[in-house]
Image (cartoon, rainbow, N blue to C red; front, side):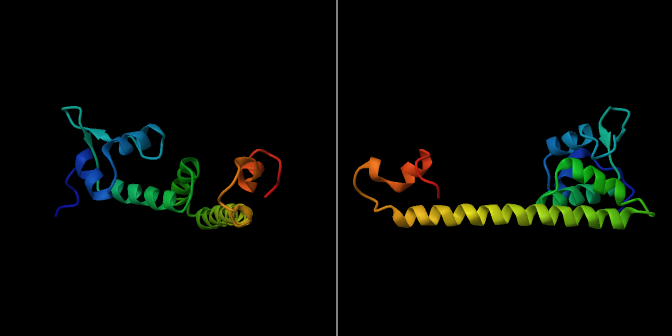
Length: 139
């Protein structure tokens, strides 16, 4: 296939595995450059846009926000400080994820304690889960 053939938005969406509306949204948000327009007014893309969309999808999967992804895209072309700055942002994202995991583990332990303490029958007033949710008892 000739990689210099302009692609339609539908072809780009299919190759990148995203919806057409997603491409338009990323353009509005400045994650993707404005595409060239054909005389008909339709968008016309080069093959590189598919790689950018895959980059965005993978970064989102790793938990980066769209703002952070915009920065990562800019840094990916910065030969002076790009790799160092990308690593720093990835380290920060990892720290954020580890903090969220620790919080979820704390919540899980509290909930497990409540589930264990609940007999599963009797009066709702005696249910430790309902009392905890009502603020009477801390998990």
